[in-house]
Length: 80
Image 1 (tube, rainbow, N blue to C red):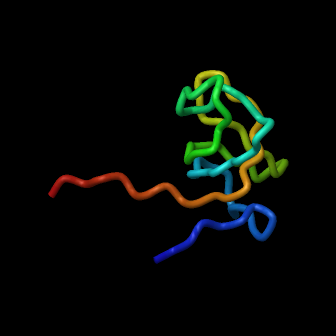
Image 2 (cartoon, rainbow, N blue to C red):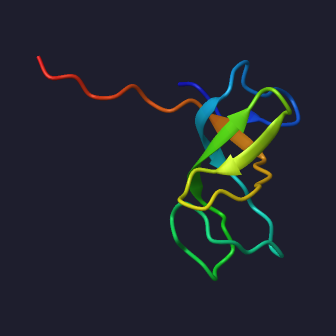
Image 3 (tube, rainbow, N blue to C red):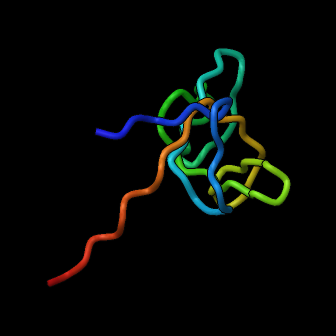
């Protein structure tokens, strides 16, 4: 079983959407799960930009985020 990757240890090699986990007691925002005004301490999807090493939430109004861990999105299902 693969494990979550710590952002401080490694970031994705290329830009794209990834599963992320951010846990900050004092941080509140409208994340992709629309759990505002509760602290975001669950799995969400964010976009990583390799050009400037930044993360933004994958929502209609992207805003910066600081995930502590990330993981690859699973492959889409395929019909046989």
